[in-house]
Length: 307
Length: 238
Image (cartoon, rainbow over all chains, first blue to last red):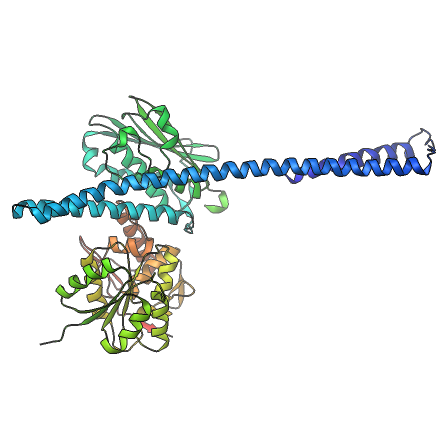
């Protein structure tokens, strides 16, 4: 932005160069005499000033128009996002609440103690589901202003820990989970960040992979270095995500067709994205329907001073 | 027969007080209910509660203001704040202002009863709670809460901010069994399935820094399958 102002100096620099040439060079420095009557001089100055003002105003107005248009577009997008979020929230609340109301009706009218117990358990399950949703919403809201605690994070150690936790899950028993990180020519560099938040992000990615694969599928947890970036990937041979749904999976409370009926708050990937962004990183996704999905988390490598 | 402990329950949400009050009564407390801060201050004189459970966000006078006024009037009735704000600095503020404990909504009512009992056990009638002390000491270990530093034999111990917060929570709840989930909720402000390991990692960091042997702990004891307990005797120092 600021560099643009330097272009204003270009004519001055050219003139200075010409002056130098005329003064030092062998060329003679001719004297120009311009004769003009006062009326014409006044006319030239007046018209010149008007032209200058008109051009300035035109440019200013154009800039202003572009700015307003951008603001309008951003506002419209924000309003649309908000409505979409509210609609999804409404949907996420509707189901457990309906179940709770039905459960309560069953508690009141249950013909046997056994049925009443069953109804109570289901009411409690739904209340816990709502609690989890609220907890995730709060987590997401907090991430925006949470002061993240930064230290040098050994990515290999972080991933190994996440892997151990994932392998303890019952779904992990009939899926093949592999893990690979580079050792040669040098080990994976550290990233500078919040261990707990990064661990949460990787946990969420592995959790998704376990949820959207079937028994016998493969899940790969891998990481590698690409210059100034560490790329962590969770790949699976699961159902894959349709092209049309791919841009939306990071949105809060979005559920693709394949994700309906799968337990979860619909906030897991939004949290992953928020964690990546707080670390100056990015998230990416590649998927083929029926073949599988790769989620990648790109994080800047810690600078030497941060290690 | 001992008289039942008296609890004043303050929340503007009638749905909460009408369900929690009977639950607390069944758990062995005599309960009075107030629906905002002003009403609570009015009731404290007559009801003289042994403990106050109070929401933070309320109309007219919020929980924080009630707490400030009580402490200013040198009233050290134990207070448990029900915060809705998850921000960890808000929670730290609640402790600094003289709350004895806090609990994030939504919570399990059994958890509230456990906290009420723990705070009552810890409370020293008429005295400032440990949770409002600026400096806490346990033998050679001193925690300066305002500067967020821990000193061992007058030498500063290098700790991450999270480890300091963890030590602070443990030292303000001495001799109390604290589950990993509760530490996550109180210190991290959020919970996730793998989070309990984050707690273990930080506890290990604290032990290393403090030179505490888990087999013969001077400070932090592991209660197998349950959580942790700060076993040293903690006192407020000036």
